[in-house]
Image (cartoon, rainbow, N blue to C red):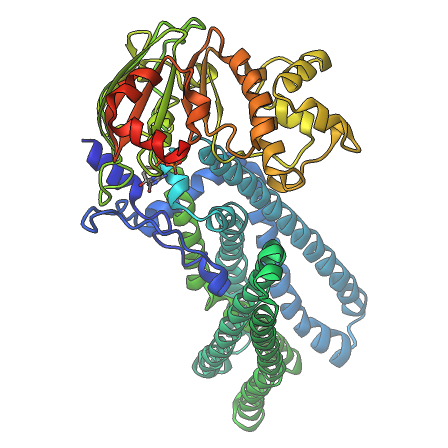
Length: 619
Ligand SMILES: Nc1ncnc2c1ncn2[C@@H]1O[C@H](COP(=O)(O)OP(=O)(O)OP(=O)(O)O)[C@@H](O)[C@H]1O
Ligand SMILES: [Mg+2]
């Protein structure tokens, strides 16, 4: 059962990222192939399903949609009306000198363009209005999803890819949708109107147009396709340029120390040059596009003028009808050209939509529990717990059974990679067990709401994560009540962070920089300890909480931690064995299995695993 679920989660979310692959090398595609290769990806949704699902996002905006469509209709009508007006203008005003026509036609011209302006504005405005609402909605839903996905999902995915889903793909969906709508409604109506007018003015000429017109449109479409593919390459090469810059900026320290300047410079030169070359190519195609299209249109025009004026058609068609015909024909080219892109627009939108829905359809963390975990913790129990991160990897934890009593401090030791972090991460349910059971207060952990379970656990982890905000907000992060200054300072004093914080130029208001780069490793760790202190939770998880501190400050912080651990149930991991000698029990892990449990003294007396670890450190 669980295996099935895993496989489903592990299925590539980037299933069809036709949309997301524009960034060349910088597109770090998430490496998330299903473990055994045989497990299926998400059931491939048909384009129609995606399309229908996208429509549901527009449904609430029926009124605005109707206005937009009406605007497009008006736009289409005015185009045809303008071409039609050519006949009375030339035949009536100029040839016959009809007084009413002389007055009426200019008014009509103003009227037509007024209507066209209003209709054009209304449709553009409301399409954008709906589009941005849909984008906002999609972004909100995906962001919310990102907050609730299982931890394993983030392990597998590249952050760049996840960001571009929210920013780029959602916009792509809306753009493609509004473009195709414009083509379907406005362009097709315009085309019908203009063609109808052409047949009305002269069916013989219209038939001739039907022969040469499509040929021209197809050639034009080819040219623009080339044009689009080049501009995609430009986007790719631009992505490459920013990718190199990003790495150079972020990796500035490594580059300096390892003397990578020349290499970076060479890489940048490559990207920079290819970007220049692509842009020149685009300029050439762009500059050629226009005259070629005009030449082709001129060819059509010339053919029709020749036929109209040489044959017997000329006898039957007035100057006005002919001009009206030609105007309609010229106006017809751009809608026809856009109509040839309809399919690719729709495909683009559907591909982008699919990649978004793939995320939205991922299973969130299981959170079916309804019980609220009490603040008083009586027991924590691991019952025969096994854990595997992915199907193809070996088990990381094997048949772990362990009971922890209220207020007990249990230390975990073992070689790097023996599974200590994995074991403690199971308690706040950051990962799902493969088999076995975890119980708190004699109830399976999944009977509690995730929020209440995690609310009772404070952690200081191996890699401290700080937000790009002030020190004060970082420490108060996640605390339910607003934290007053005195409480904040007390926590920081206990964590031995207060002194260094007030010595900073802005004190508690100092910005820590992206992921806390402005602070030293030890300072970050003390901030994290203060954060955990402030949370005041009954269960404490310390995963190498003092590893970045020197012996002197470690001793001081340890005093703070000791005070903190009083009366709490604590799971502590430490490489430096001296820090855990006082623990009630020490659990020794080896290759994912518990090999020894006992107090410091007992384990030393045993002269086995713990003894060896101890010997290594203290000899
Ligand atoms: N998120 C993860 N996804 C896949 N495998 C993982 C993940 N985290 C850890 N592992 C693997 O699980 C095993 C145990 O890792 P864990 O981090 O629990 O070890 P540890 O005992 O905490 O080591 P250290 O002392 O170095 O922190 C390792 O082999 C590691 O490669
Ligand atoms: Mg670890």
